[in-house]
Length: 181
Ligand SMILES: CC(C)(COP(=O)(O)OP(=O)(O)OC[C@H]1O[C@@H](n2cnc3c(N)ncnc32)[C@H](O)[C@@H]1OP(=O)(O)O)[C@@H](O)C(=O)NCCC(=O)NCCS
Image (cartoon, rainbow, N blue to C red; front, side):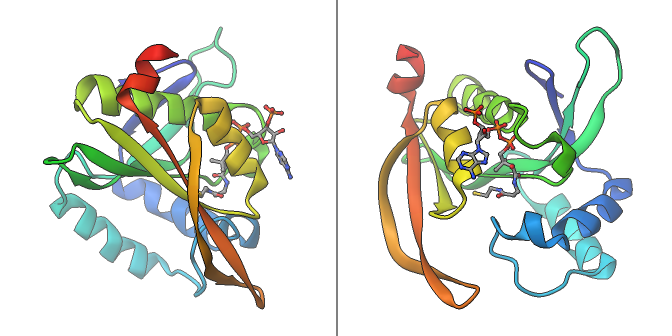
């Protein structure tokens, strides 16, 4: 378990899969992700079988939040993880989704990102952590800025979405910037 401020990250269990199917079929959640086609439980089970074969460092993690810090109740709300860890150059991409929309805009996404940054820099000894985000995903961009990411560029019109091409923004943080925070 990776533990932060009102956040904990744990391994994904088979019982989590129906929640992912529900979230990842929700049009509002999908807007920020590059998912076009409906997702079935069977596909999610296949995905989970592959997750178990991945390196433990790159396995997606379940996000649990503690809405009331005075109480022991934890709520499973989404997942996050490192993608494509490059151990020679010590970099990785970060992915995140919070599927329980009632918990959006309450700072949890920012807290998850801070925890992933801490884990990546302080435990995995990574040097550069980066992410991709669609230019129209203003909530996500704001959340990443709050976590300390810098906008470093964009892939122009790299995503086709609802009849329009959208820029894909690249944001990153270096270990030295994390230490300076
Ligand atoms: C993106 C995501 C992880 C952010 O998590 P979150 O917990 O909602 O984000 P936070 O509450 O930490 O921060 C959101 C910020 O965006 C702001 N915001 C929300 N909607 C906004 C909008 N339309 N324009 C500008 N800012 C907006 C919020 O007010 C908040 O900023 P504030 O604290 O300064 O007020 C989450 O919403 C999510 O998983 N969405 C669906 C999937 C997705 O888009 N994943 C990201 C793929 S790159």
